[in-house]
Image (tube, rainbow, N blue to C red):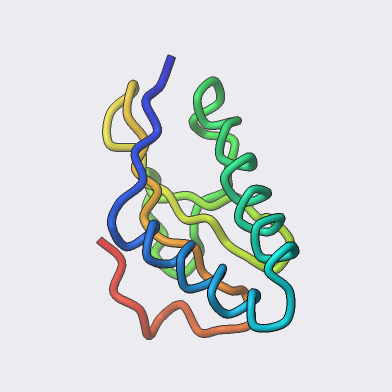
Length: 99
């Protein structure tokens, strides 16, 4: 089974998402964060289930979509995935530095 590692950037993104949504609804903020985390579970068994991020065009950097969010991850090794960032789809990804 593959180990899914959340980078500091991805953890910060989740925190920012929760804080922003909680201004209107703490309950919905928790629900949204849970949905994002749950969506990544598929990566434990299907590492290449996401599509290649078109802006980066690298085989090992892919994304899953959950609602309005892009969950961008990197296949580090066959047994390790790093969640790099959670990015709102309405924003410009090219302005962000993704490692």
